[in-house]
Image (cartoon, rainbow, N blue to C red; front, side, top):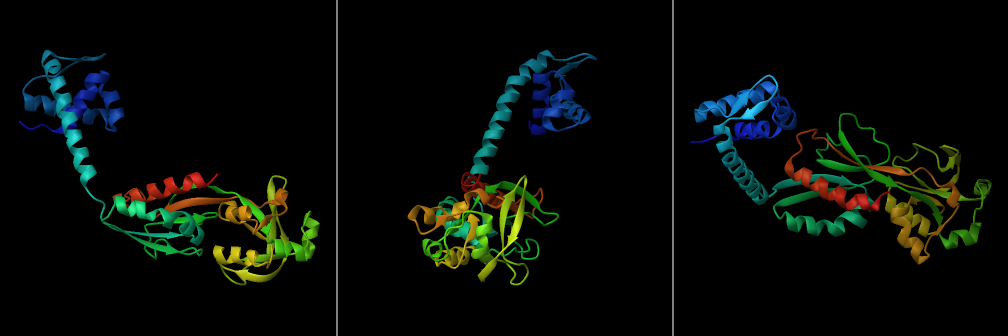
Amino acid sequence: MSFDLEAVRAFLNVAELGSFTQAGLRLGLSKSRISLLVRALERELGVGLLQRSTRAVHLTADGEQFRPRAQRLLAEADELGAMFQAQRALRGQVRVDLPVRLARQFVIPRLPEFLTAHPELEVLLSTTDRRVDVLRDGFDCVVRIGALKDSGLASRRLGLMSMLNCASPAYLRRYGTPRSLADLDAHWVVHYSLEFGADAPSFEYRAGTGYLERPMRSLLTVNNADAYTAACLAGLGIIQAPRLGITPHLSSGALVEVLPDFSCAPMPVSLVHAHARNVPKRVRAFMAWLAELLVPQLS
C-alpha cells in the first residue's frame, strides 16, 4: 500500500496539535485542505484515524496504532529526500557583476573554494564600477554600491561601507594638511565620475544630521576605484574612499587620513537579482556564499 506523504504529514500535525486549523497554519494550508487530506488517508486505510468534535480532535484506537508508523514513514521519506538533494550537483552558469575592488580584493581570492565545492558550476564574472543593466545584460546577480535605482528587481542589503578622506604624504608635503573645511580652498581632489562631464568635483561632508557638498578643484577625473586610489597614491589629490579598500595603504603609510571629522556618508552595499521568487538553486547557492563572504567586511 502506498501513501500520500502530504496526507500523512497533515494527519501527524493534526494529531500533535489537536486542531485542523492549527495544523493548516503550520503547514501553510487551509483547514479544508487539511481535512480533505486526512479523509483521503482514512479512506485509503479503511479506518477512522481521528475522532472529531466541535471542541477537540482526538486519535481513535486505529489512529494511535498508525501514528508511530506514520512518523517513521515520514522521517524515512524526509531522510531519503535530503540524501538525494545533497547529492544533486549544482550545474550550469552563474553570471555575476561585481565592483572592481570587491572582486579583486575579496571575491576572486576565495572563488577557488566555491568552485571546488561545486565543480560542475561555471561563474561568468564581470568586474566594472559602471552600473550594468541586470535584465538586458542577462546577469543572475550583481553587487551594487550606493543607492538602488532599479525597479522590479529583488535586493538584499548586505551592509554599509564606512568612508574616509585621505591623501599621500607627498601631496600633503606639497599642499599642507587641511585642518578645516576652509583649508580645502587651497587643495585638490581626485574626481570620481562614472560619466565624464556629468558632475563637478566636490567634497562631501557631514553637516548636522545630513551631508553637504563643497565645490572643489580637480586635476584628474577617473571612472573606477583602482584608478581613484592609484591617483591618490601618486599625489594627485585628496580622495573620499571606502575604508575597506584603503586600510592596507593607511597601515603602510602610503596614505594618510585627513579631516576625520568630515567624512562623507557611508555607502550601502546590496545584492541584486532579477529572479524574483523563482531563484535557480545554483544562483541561490552563489548568492548565499557571496553574502557570507562580504557581510563580515561591512558595518
